[in-house]
Structure formats: C-alpha cells, structure tokens
Length: 434
Length: 167
Image 1 (spheres, helix red, strand yellow):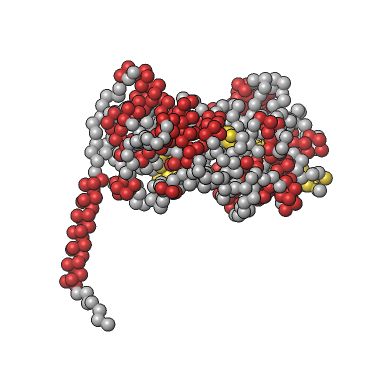
Image 2: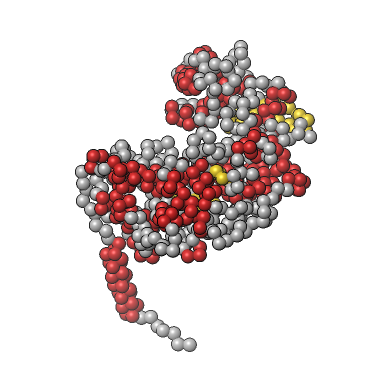
C-alpha cells in the first residue's frame, strides 16, 4: 500500500492554511459574537411610570418569579447572589435592583429588553441561558416595559455580582453566541386561533414569563430544552424531579384545570401532593398573583395532558404486604410518619394528600421522596400551607433508604427503587455544605 | 424487642416496640421529663433533643432509629443545683413564662452554640425558627441566647467562675 509521504514543505503549507482558516473562523465568530455596549442612563424615577404600569409589572414579575433566582438565601430582594448549580458549574445571579453601579440602574429600557430577548448585558457581554431568555423573548413588548418599570422602582441595593465558577472554557462568554445560533430561535407569542382566550392567555404566561418548561422539559447535552414530543416530558430542578406535564408521567390520578389551579394557588392538591423544593417559591409567587392569570396557566397546563390517560394503575395501599417484606421500614413509618400520614391521622382530615396518590412515590426516581424526608419543606403560602419537617437529624441514610423502600412497596405498584442509600447520602452531603 | 439507647452518656437497654417515639421512652421509661409533647407533628419543637449532636424532634423519632446513637436531653445540660451556662442565661433573662417550650428551646439553642460559639443575630433567628412558644417569650429567649454567647466569651478571657458546668 502506498502511503502519502508528508514532507516538511507540504506539512508547512497545510499548517499555514489551517492557521489561516482558524483565524478567519475565529474572526467571523467574534464578529457574530460581538455585541455593543449600550449607553448608561440616569436611573429613572418612580414618577416616570404610571401607577397601573407598576402594578401590571408587579403581577408579571410574580409570574416570572424573578425574585426567586435574583435573591440570595436571607438576602435583599432582587439584589442577586443566589448560587445556581448547573451541570456546567455554579452561576451566581446578578443584582437587578436599580443601583447604578452594581445593579441595573443605568440600564435603558432598550438595554433591559435586549437582555430579556437576546441574553446580552447592557455592556455587551453575553448572559448565560440560566436567565431563560429563550422564554422571555416570547413576551409582548408592553409587558417587558411594565416589568422594567417595576424593577426600576425597587429600592436600589449595592451588591456587586459574585464570580461564576464554570467548567473550562465556558467562562469565555463569546461562546454563548454559538449556543444562541443553535438554540435561540423563539418568536414573540402568537395566539392559536383554534383555542379560546383563556387558553391562549395561559399559554402566553406559561411559555413566556412563567418558563414552566425550563424545569418540566428535559435538556440536551448543551443545556437547551428539548422540544417537540419531548417538551414537558419531565426534567430536573436543583436535584428534584420536575414531573412530566404532558401526561407521560406516573401521576396516579389525572390532573385537571381545577386541581392544577388549587395546587398552584395553595401549594397542595389532595390527589397529587404538595409543592416542595423549587416548586415552593413558584407557588409562593402564584398564590399572590391575580387569580385569572393562575386559572389561565392551569387551563393551559391541563390541556397538555388532556388526551392521555394516566399511566399508573389505580392508587395502591398494601400496608400488610409492605410490612411483611420490610419490617424495618414499617417500624420507621409507624414512629416517624404515621402521626401525620396514616389513614385517619389529624392531618388527613384537612384534605392533605393520601400517600397512595402522591406523585413523588410513583416517579421512576426516588429523589423527590428522599429529599422530602431529609430536607422537609416549608409552607410556600404562609402558616396554613402544607409543610413537612426534616428528618435528617433523626434518621440515618440506611433508615431513609428502608423507609423509602417501604413507602414505594406500600403505595405504588411500580418497580422497587434502587440505590436508595446512595441517593440519601448524596442529598445529605449537599445539605452539609455551607 | 430490646433496644439499647445512650442518653446523656448512660446506656439503657429497653424492652420496647421500635416504632415507639423516642419522646415517650425518655419520659415514661427513663423519667427524663424535660422534653415535652407539644404537637406531635414536628411543628412546635417542644420535644427537641440532640441526636449525635444535632437537634431533632423526639416525638417523630422512632426509638428503634436511635439505637447506638448519642442522645442528649435538657437534663444533660445541667441540674437545678449546677445549671449549665445556657440554662443560667435563660434564668437570668427570665426566658420562661409557662416553661413548656423551654426544654426544646434550650436544646435547639445549645446545638447552635456547640457548632458555632459566636452566632450573629440572623444565624440565631434562622436556627431557632422551628421552635414555637405559645406565651410569646421569643424576644426573651433570643436575649438569653445572646447572653449565653457573651458569657462564653467571658470564659475565654479567663473568668474561671463562669465556666460551663457539665455533668
């Protein structure tokens, strides 16, 4: 076989050609990636905006839940600094109060809308898609104006952004231009003529500001949401499973617009469970949002699964069998859980969900059940809301695993969970971090 | 079934159903009546004890779950004759009104001070958030915890007399 012989000269020619192609390529990429900085403005005054615009903006910001990501634990509202764990490293949210130095006080309306639609900071830097601009670019112009007015009239707080901790080379922001070329094609929301006004209003809120699919759809390897038939087939948020909303999930009972409304408004639905983990803050916002907006979102989300029957068999409760196969788990349940969750317990007379219908016990992954046991959750809507204490101090990982296995075998017909002890250890390790 | 638990340094072998709440065992079998039954739901904190150094609701802890683990109750902080530092601070600030929540408050606060001897106000409030007082003495309880922090700092500068008494 004749082999091509690489002389020094041809190699040099190839190298020069390659280098030139690289330079042209990099140049072209940087030209695409470059975004100009927009001039700063003197921070607007509250009197610059009509009162109706401010209240409209407040209602929209509640749907968008800006405050959740843009407030650190125990920090000042909208001043940023919350750590957002992603598969690519940790991002820190930024200060969106109107502080001219560290916040968005110097941002014009145009700069704000460019950030919301194109993911570009006022100074021209690309923003990471943790800011769901793929959703926000679907929002109507007037609504973005109202949110701008609302944010620019919050109390300014000096809080410089923390440095992100991303895997190499993602700290190099121009790369985000490539991500946007691939994934940022959404258009402004257009109503569907074959659906009624409430459905369209709900779709607009859920797809745009609400960005529900940001958690409830799976993501691809580049961190972009999967679409088409994968949309709303379930995702992950901060280690919690965000169940499917398209009816492909294992909920024992079908969701309706009414049950979704109750859940989104109060944080609990008697036939599915309570809002825990990152859903808690979502419910907190929606419990205070205008009721018509929440009804519309419920109508739209219910429609996503309207033509699919629930996949799980009817609710199960096989107490005797589960106790026989897992006596350790049964004893733990009797001592730690039964006071609230056993049939006839005081809590059960208040419309709290029967464990046989709780979606967390039907999911393929045990994460939500294990997290609820170890982390508990606060009432998202105030003192009367659903709450659960943490059992991290009283139960060991082995005991959490026994308990979860018992719950699964008693309340679900689905296959037993595996690697429960590892799941518990993972959650506990996360908890013990500062 | 025999379950062996370690409370305030002493081992106890008990013939109990492992599902029995730890609180019932502490009160009924071991006659350690400091921890109280409040709500039975993990929402008031009156039953708080330490398990391996961490505050836990003993009303929701099956005794079988704590076999071989270190349990500490309010009786382990000191006695009426020789109260612990935090107990002295609660007394000085008259933090108790009816007193029902106080054993839980003490154990909850002690867990914080064991981990962080100099907590700031925000850390104290966040930590004490799970414990309720129906009389509404929270402000006095917070003062007592701040006093204990200050007393402990006094110990560090050499005031031997104020040293915490532990059995």
